[in-house]
Amino acid sequence: MIGLTDFPQLSTPSLQQQLAGHAALSLSLPQLESLPEETRNQFVFVVQDPFTSYYYAKVVADFIHLIEILGYRPILLRFSANGKALHIKGYLTRFAKTADFLNRLA
Image (tube, rainbow, N blue to C red; front, side, top):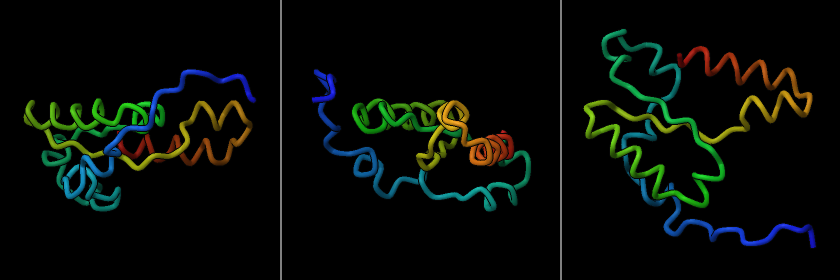
């Protein structure tokens, strides 16, 4: 009807199911900002891409595990519209908030 064909199947189990109870989902930005710098340097933030997170969840879960193997602590950020899409669509206030959030993480 809309011309899209051959979409992959949604991941089963979902990313949330694969990472249920995992520490990668547990810290908020205020909690992270309150930590000492040497502790913050141990974290790797994973910004979700909706296509990968919903259709290839195992790739994201495996990446989370790789970060741990390399000795870092992964933090999987909640999914939100990325800055590019917001900017292109003209949602400049939301774009600025997203940019501010990512700058705080950096």
